[in-house]
Length: 141
Image 1 (cartoon, one colour):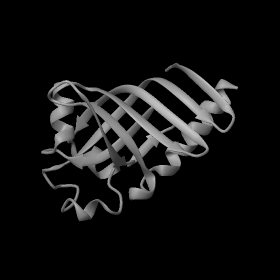
Image 2 (cartoon, rainbow, N blue to C red; image 1 turned 180 degrees about the horizontal axis):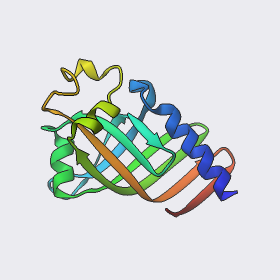
Image 3 (cartoon, rainbow, N blue to C red; image 1 turned 120 degrees about the vertical axis):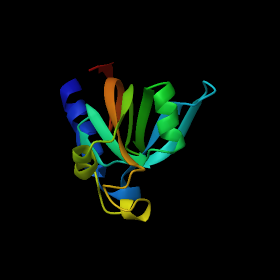
Image 4 (cartoon, rainbow, N blue to C red; image 1 turned 45 degrees about the vertical axis):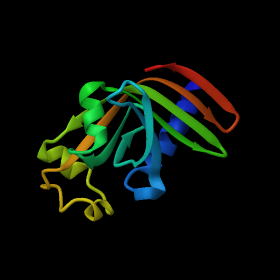
């Protein structure tokens, strides 16, 4: 049952990728004062529950928080599921990552993949709590 639930959760997350605000989740980071903070963010790409990428601004609060403390949590929820992932997050600024993770809607915030303020955040899961339909599982990756 665990593998089936993990696969279902992964399909839900992958279905959110590149959908702009129709594909958002909550990203929780530790702020500069050591307190947890949460904000919504659109998913750029995902590989099941293993990793998720996001496009954001290099000069913003998220990047500053990650530079200080790279621990993070991501949550997707609806009436039928709650997918909570815990892990680490890193900032990617290389041209390949920026091009691979660009999606429609980012042009409202950035001039393109070569915009020096545009960066990619890559979250890597280390543990999970999944409730999908009637199934509930927790574990480590």
